[in-house]
Length: 119
Image (cartoon, rainbow, N blue to C red; front, side, top):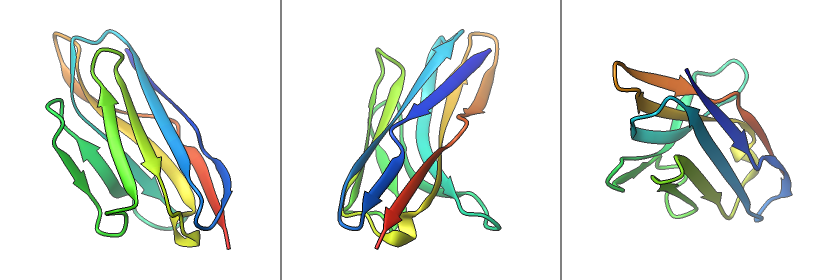
């Protein structure tokens, strides 16, 4: 089994910054794509940013220029640096990883971390 543990959420004023981290642990041979998603109540989960094992990144238009995703392949971690935060960024953020455990390739999700941006 694989577990993803997120940290770094919290409350910040508009214009401020937060840094989310996600660490994968368990039986891991390699990790393909990792990413961050967010989901507001009543809405579908949406992509925020993804990063491949080679470092290629993809961002939602709403966060381009403000958020930066990075990863440490040796530590199986992914980080989302969020700058210039807006009240509309308020929601729960989830980490996702596509993990190769040697005998299977599966996607795993973290438990979610709340980000609240006050105006």
